[in-house]
Amino acid sequence: MMKTKRNFRLSEGKLEKAGTKSNCGLKKTMMLVVVLTAIVCTQVAAQGFRRENFPEGSYSPVTNINRAGYPRVLSDNSVMFRVNAPQAQHVQIDLCGIKYDMQKSEGGVWTVTTQPQVPGFHYYSLIVDGVSVADPASQTFYGCSRWSSAIEIAEVGMDDFEVQDVPHGEVRTVYYESKVDESWRPLMVYTPAGYNESKLEYPVVYIQHGGGEDHRGWMEQGRTAQIMDNLIAAGKAVPMIIVSANSNVRSRNGGMGGGYSWQGMQIFRSELLENVIPFVEKTYRVKKDRTNRAMCGLSMGGGQSFYIGLRDPEVFANVGVFSTGMFGGIQGASNFDLEAEVPGMLTDTKTFNKQFDVFFVSCGEQDPRIEYTRNIVKKMRDGGVEVRFNSYPGDHEWQVWRKSLYEFAQYLFR
Image 1 (spheres, rainbow, N blue to C red):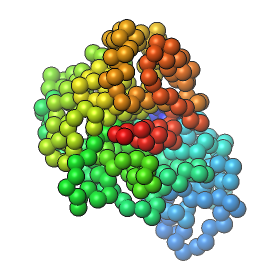
Image 2 (cartoon, rainbow, N blue to C red):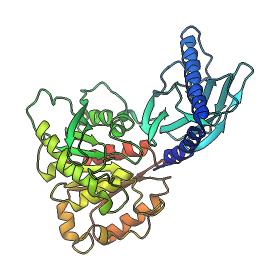
Image 3 (tube, helix red, strand yellow):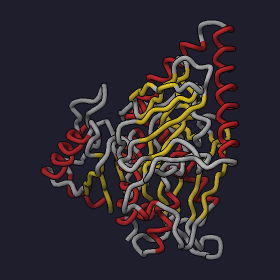
């Protein structure tokens, strides 16, 4: 999916390899994790009784468990990691697909300082004697198809992504019954400040995560509640409900949707239209017409939003497509035919434009998908399609997607 995808493939491959050698190898892996966890816990506890001499100008990221510990972000946005593992023979940090060899002191403490990092949220892992594990000193997040450590590099001027002294909405985890895979499945739902006290009905955004993530991504990594609280309080966005579903859904016959094609979207399309939306409209006070529904998503979720949102105009009048790879820039994506994928977009453009109040596309400026995205947007505009587009500094990463939501939300339901 992104830099962190490459990170996942590298580190997961080693993890799987280590786990298939033998029972002895598995026991060794488990022992490493247990020992490393115990060491870090001891280190964290010890830090409560002594003052660390941190590099001047460094800070502890919000993703740390111990805000008085490591890792530390330095003044140039490089990151200093420290791990106490005296029995380990080789320790690395795998950050955004780049592996850094850590150096061991006589006391068994391993340290390394990375290259400067771009602002935003980055998954990382420890590799201890060939075994990829989450760092016990970091909070963990579901990304890269596993529980991963992460580090948040602060960006100056992005206070709208932080908790502020404004009225706060709520994020709830609720469960609905899926008839697609015959199970109870989770949703995370943001309701704006005042929802519980009012009797008003609200417009709804159905927001989709990327590959290797799930329904937690937008609410945790994406900071949806913070962004929406601040926008609404400033009068830059209307109060709205945001629903984050897990699109990693299997059909009752064992099939699983996927791939950038209309056919590949059908399983999740059924889940969304037949299960998720009816549940939301039964459970929450929402406006039930197309003009008050939006669909958006990042990467894989951007492809879902493109196909489902644009090919179901009777359901959605607002569509946001963030950093999708279907236009190009990823393996298997080439020669994207707009008219074939969304019939009428170029041959009956006047009707297409009337169907959508907002059609928004975005991408990171360092993302391999950016030139393909710019080219397809130009083709749309040359054909008369009314599409908004913006790009932001960054690769295929959460800071770009936070900015995408921040902008998209301001256009909606006006």
